Amino acid sequence: MRAIYNFQLDEMAQNGKPVLSPWLVKWKKVAPPKSVQQEPPHFTVAQMAAIVNKAKTQMYRSLFLWRPARAGELFALRVETDVDFDEQTITIRRSVFEGEENTSKSDTGDEDRTRTVPIDASIVAELKKHLKGRRFGYVFQTRNGTPLRLSNVREDKLYPILEELKLVQPGVGMHAFRRGRISHLVYSGVSRQVIRDWCGHSSDRMIDHYTKLLRQHHAPEMAKLKPLLDPSWTPTDREETGTSSQVVVN
Image (cartoon, rainbow, N blue to C red; front, side, top):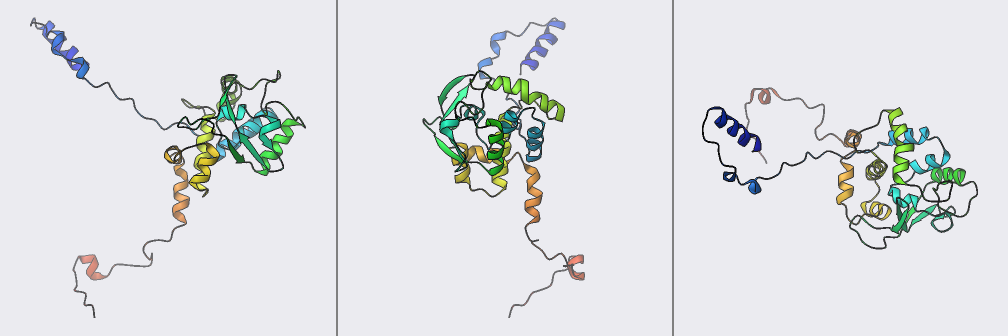
């Protein structure tokens, strides 16, 4: 709309005609251009495994291996209260953003979304290697015992690995692990209720959004279904020529 208006002004000015008054165009009634919606970045299972194996230290290997928790929730985990190796679970009670602790919340902002999430034997093994018997403090912490900062993890640890693996794309970050893992859980047959409990989602809306990202699973899933038609079927002469015949039902 603005381009047409400016073109009209230029044409009138060049031809010596009276210039159109700006007040004739009601700019408030012109809708702003809509931004193009892009699929948020995510990691596939193979990509996540490659990232874990490229990690330089055991702490980051353990961090990148985790189930679909938010990065801030992982940074806030404490060894003495939130990790149970015997039960193979973690309890998410709080979140950390740039060093500040907050209560863990759901995607809808509900207060006190404490939840217990199971972890498999591989994560237990990697965590034990990382902690080396340590029984207190943050699970993932700096040398000074403070929680990790998302910006530092992203810029200093994750991005160099992504560059090496040629996985850099606009907007990619720690949340790409969460998106990929939630999609993988859905396609692995885990129920929506369980996924909501593990991930801290209040509804299926975000889960449905994430599952759109792993379309490579569609073909293998379709291969499990039986064909609708018998592949040995061939059309008759009448069907090939388009001639219809009357069917008599006794």
